[in-house]
Length: 217
Image (cartoon, rainbow, N blue to C red; front, side, top):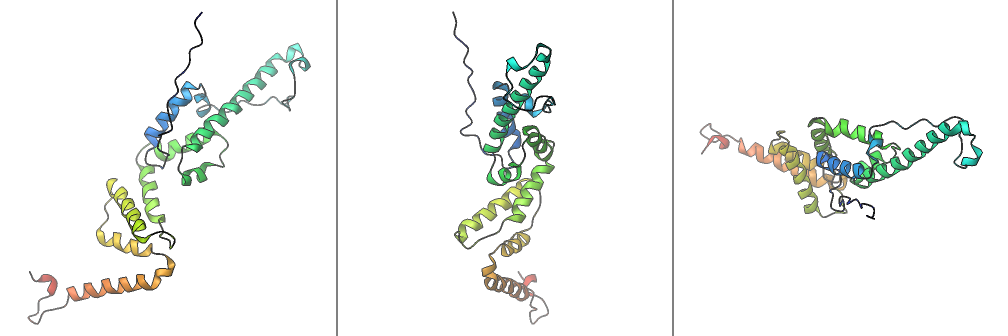
């Protein structure tokens, strides 16, 4: 007699955490897992209602009369849904980066998490672009980390913005970077701003013949 068929589940150990830019591949891989676990239905179905007359999990089959079979069945369906919802919700949250985890951790419904992410990241590129620009704007340098590491991090954020087809001149990039310096660096930041302003003024200084330095070759 043949033994039971063992399902081969996808290996998610190398799945890149969701960061808002990789939603399509991330969601497809998790959906495959949920389908193989037969729990994907909780992403698309609302939870079944709990019969009012059943208020505790301690009710046994012997305590339920024959005519209550339907009620017992509904109760079992609700218990399964709740268990599967916990499984799916756990996988969704455990495969997010920290910022998205903090955003969704208070959601108790896997369906609500999935629907919200579809609206934000799945329909078109608008959600992704908004997320990338948001990361760039919210980035802030701190005293505790090496300065060059943070500058490289900022440069990578700029590259992400540019890769989405959004234009940003180098002057804007530099000015925004200055505003990202820690508050304790305010004096140094002001010094750099003053130095930039002085260099610009010198570039436009007129020559004795009436021209300007910026116009001479």
